[in-house]
Image 1: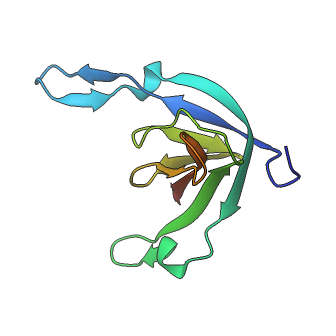
Image 2: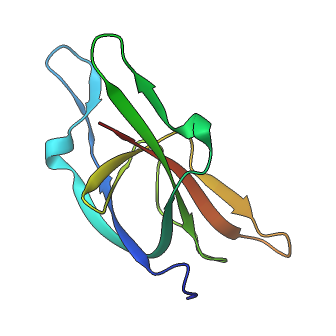
Image 3: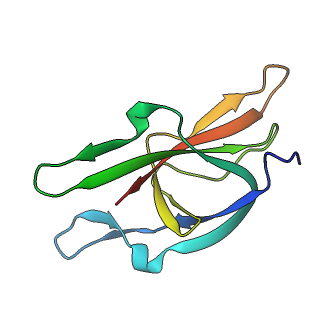
Length: 117
């Protein structure tokens, strides 16, 4: 593991349940928490990953990038959440699994995360 991949996060995965009206939703009170070590989490360098709204109330959305080391796949879904540094971050979009250019498997995984205040 290089110095870049020394951080750990907690993956939060909530089961899909049916409410009393027949709607499917995530039950975050029954979520499974799993520690994931050896990742890199950094603020997103793209300005499009951060925004503010000032209509009714101020909302700040900050973007983050989670990345694994070369050759490491990660059990992470678009419906999961990540706990990191006192924040709960939502996975934004699909988790990106980059193919290994020299053989089968995954070269590394990247996921865009967002914190909403």
